Image (cartoon, rainbow, N blue to C red; front, side, top):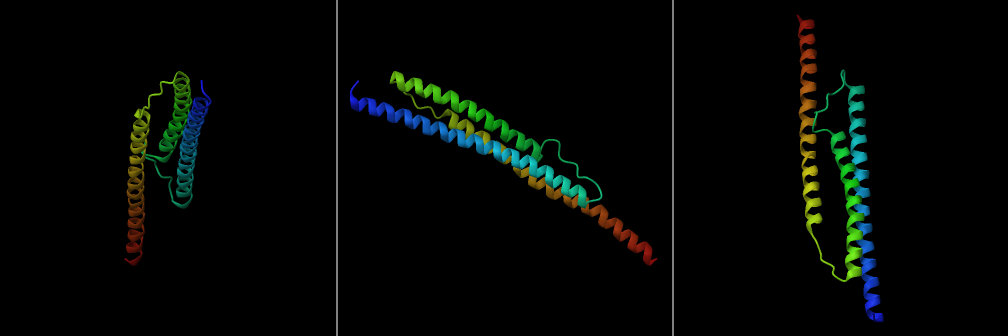
Amino acid sequence: MTRLSKIDRIREHQANERTFLAWVRTSVAFIGFGFAIARFGLFVRQLDAATQERAPIPHPVFNSENLGISLVVLGIATIIFAVWRYDQIFQQIQREDYQPNRIMVWILAIVIAILGSFTIPLLLLRDTANSIRTQPSSRKEGASKSIQHD
């Protein structure tokens, strides 16, 4: 093996490590966002319960805890994939038969798009739940005011 080919192989391994670290950053971001979303949803529910007469009932599927847990699971799966992919590329570099593969990029993009689309019902259901919750209490207030005037 010539000196130039050794330098090229070193560069390839370093590029593989940088790619691995990018996947690690991505997985840490998923886990961090998932944790923050789940905890923030819990905080908002507790705040609503403290300021309203009754505790809000979260949607059984579209809630921040489920979205947060999904992101954490996606982060864990991403780090497992990153280690597997790093090792696969390492072996291909050593055998000098590297074959690029874009399938995981597509899979991850589709999963993120699906999880991202789950935030839309979270926002819409929260607005409808607030409007439903405020209407009966305003009717009660209106009814008690009309009784007082009679």
